[in-house]
Image (tube, rainbow, N blue to C red; front, side, top):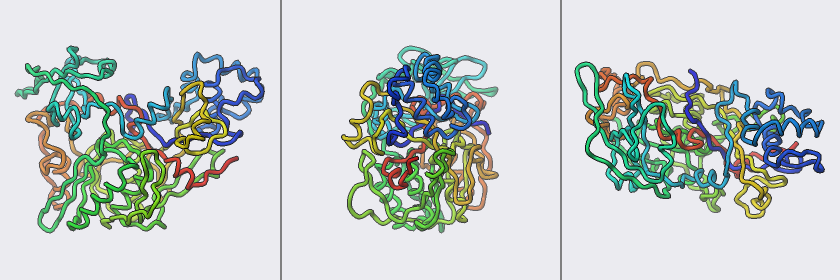
Length: 507
């Protein structure tokens, strides 16, 4: 499967290069005349980049002649252009450049200005007209208070109709006035029509809980737990464990894990969730990280958990006894997927497979992001965590540039990666919710919601008959969703404390 990406970006763990050997902007006695930012980009990629040995201009020898090296760096108008040139485009879809690391850090914590709803964009057939549809709404958010709900349709923002090609600037405002619409089905197709309604939504600073929907149902001898989990956030570990505790107390023996909107997050949270599902011991390997040839001494194995590590919002471990992990010890799990399921979500799938757990995938193929990165700062001599005030003081004060280069690939205990993503289990491929807009989309976690309904049919041993899509929408016209407007929506990252745990080795 070709990797699907429209404005695909990623978030990874915070990191600052260590020691003079890894200095990102050292000027070698002033012999290099290019800007600090350009030197930072080259040095950081030369040291960490997974494909460093595939990029001729990142060879160690490139820096031997200081004058020639300066001339090379100065060919590029700015550091971003240099970064783009040094990427290994044949395989790298996910490294990205950071203009302002302070903005990046705030978003990493899940706290940023938000409207509190996620939406998809589709193109009307035989037309340049584009419409939006609400996928989910965050509780007590601006969108929730404005009355938006899953399945609502809109055709304009702030008085401007949505058309193809999409003008991304329309989504930059802090206030949306949405022109609402409805979809009507006819014998030979469908028509989207404006209503007389508009909905005003004003963004605000919001921390989104990744545990969006949590439900339990009894179906005969089965107690089914449903969890819509939208991001692997390290600062919600205790709440996630409490939810699995509730599952366990109520005898949940079938789990439907909805990751259709989950682009990834912290690798240790991915391992933690897999541990809650499987009950594997902390002697079992969840993932293996493999670095570039220069950094191969850092290759490490990442284990399952039996206790729950608790972190504060900075990513630092909270002192005290870690809670005992609530595990269901399941031999089967249902995972709902979409074309936006990526990264740490895929790592859960891959990490469980070697242990005899039947991972049933329902929905659409996943992205195929089996790589991870770290945030590289311009900070010679700093240590691993930028949250320490002394270490942060070592960050170059002359600019706020940083990078998110891919630095490792992820494999499971059997040495398997997933560059092409994962396909749905045979017989369970479901149409996108994009095709079910007439009459509104059922709430997420409702047994009548299409993907959940398919999972219930599979576990009962009687596949539900394939339903005719209520709107004849060509899936190729599903253009994007709002997650793609957010940097690092398909991320897998390591926390600074995890880098310490692995005792990363210097040259």
